[in-house]
Amino acid sequence: MNDTAQESRGTFGIEAMDVYGGSASISAQALFAGRGLDPQRFDNVVLNRRAVALPFEDPVTHAVNAARPLLDRIPRRDLDRIELLVTTTESGIDYSKSVATYVHEHLGLGRNCRLLEMKQACYSATGALQLAVGQLAAGISPGAKALIISTDISLADERAQYAEPATGTGAVALLVGDRPRVLAVDLGAFGLYSFETLDSARPLPDLDIADADRSLLAYLECLSHSFADYRTRVEGADFATTFDHLALHTPFSGMVRAGHRRLMRELYGTSPKDIQNDYERRVEPSLNYPGEVGNLFSGSLYLALASLIDHVPLPGQTRVGLFSYGSGCSSEFFSGVLGPDSAAEVGRARIRERLANRAELTFAEYTELLPETLGCLRPVSDRMVDPAGYSAYLDRVVDRPKMLALTGVEGYHRRYEWI
Image 1 (cartoon, rainbow, N blue to C red):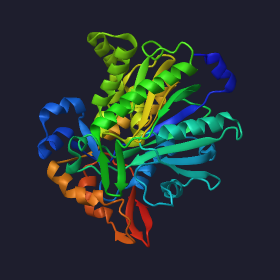
Image 2 (image 1 turned 180 degrees about the horizontal axis):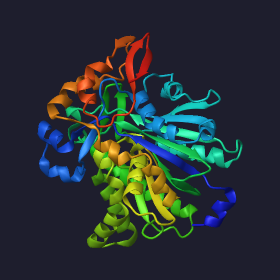
Image 3 (image 1 turned 180 degrees about the vertical axis):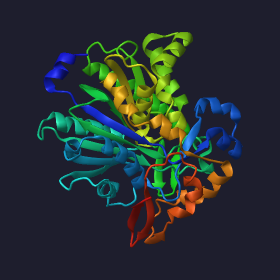
Image 4 (image 1 turned 60 degrees about the horizontal axis):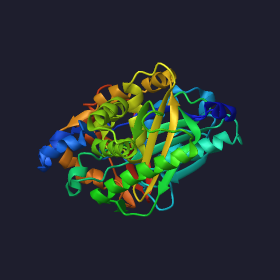
């Protein structure tokens, strides 16, 4: 990796990040038992809990509740330099009007700001990050910042079978700029691979469809070929030795394990024992938070990155390899550098503590709420939502911060209030 070339062009990447993993959650084992799923398949999912949206939550509230704590921590001068806001989501609420407009309003960002919404399944946050880094590195607005927020709502119910316990809800916010205390992106160090397939989709605002076998095969193919492309751009890149740690798109840990195993076998013919040791050292730390939230769609990779930073020592510069995959499909393997500031910055978000503070739902409570939460994306001209009606759940949240809530829809215009 040519660090001297990177320094000559400047350093850009993630300056700060935060995660909203929901205000409620349910045990993955309780979901398995409640749905009568085969317990022998639980080890392939490797989840402790998954986030659950309450009926006054939607992609807008998730995005704002992820980004608000981050913005409260940064200096005013940085807040005023946010010139690009990108929301990435599979949970759009309108064919024309973006989620970003609502998010911009309720975060109180300045009006001299580009607003965009991006969609490419679980890849879109990485696409937004790379486009933002490219724009900032071009130097056309020195000192500018970009705010990228990946936000999604789960539509999984009993129809999803084994995907239901693994499908989370929430958002990840990334502040991107020229002081990357969290992750300095290796400029020009990336590999791409994309093609047309229908491994999963959301054809209706209340329906997810998925072909699990096709999705696994596409994920594995994309990991192999995107890293192969990375090697053509980065002289001497080696999957086993270049990266101190790895963070991969994590719909569930079994898919991550399969991807890591495939490359170690494909590239080196590594023994099963050595593959396991490498997996435990370089990959497993990234799986703690995904195991508490579930698949966060385009936020999944960055939830894994936050988990990695919070669960490994970072005494000096540490290079991490990152793999982003989005169904349909588009993928990218890229890399960046972590350091002691990464742990300090992510630690300020108190992600571990906030995940532990969520309200715990029983299976009966979860199934009672599910019809309401599944309908949050359906287009209706008028609807009333009373967050106070769910105080029994909110009262269980330990040390609950002020949060944005959906209060209704008037003439298709969504209304929100802080509660």
